[in-house]
Image (cartoon, rainbow, N blue to C red):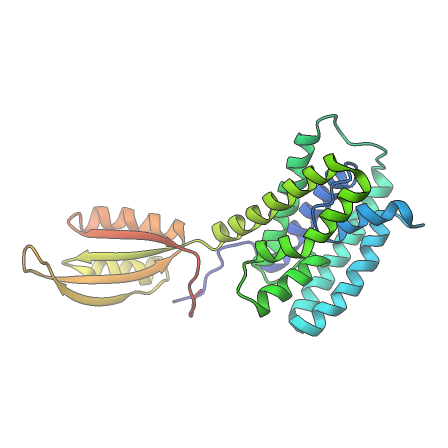
Length: 280
């Protein structure tokens, strides 16, 4: 199958993802002392006791964990993470200078918790989708994913749980409960966002005249398909069975074409998130 991009180009995905994480962290996570994950969560915990700001601590810790990523995940991951780590650190530092905050933006902690979870989770999912990360404990999570069978969301949960406990000890039960809830939701949200971004439609088409359908798949959609034959159990007639996989958007176009070209065709469509092979 011809390879087609289904997401943002890698550089754009890394840039947008990193900026989303930075905005969520600076405007909603730091001011509320939410410590539900990552180096930024650790920064919330330790910055009050250090002579440097949370943003500066984030930069130093990211550099150390980046070296760990080079060792266990290889050069390709390291180059991408250098870019995202530097962009995140620079973004946080600039936001701190341009929009200094002395208190949360609003008096609604639940509302701010939602943004503190959603923005970094969507940003992190964009990064993971192109084999990058925002640095920090994301590196630890990707190492766990590489050498174990757990999903990236579960890996993030285990790598960040310690910081949630530390934050609870320093800032009290209320902060702990908010942070723990945020960590759980973030882990689930990242896995769901990644799954939706990787969604692929698997189609089985049972028809009498597959030529037009195959032509549409190969010429218009630039995909491929596999043909087989079968016999109808009720009618005893010979039918063609066509198998193909494509993006949800392409699948909708194919559905519309089949409805016009071969209304008698029987189409089975299922959703999958794991496909290996050329084109995917």
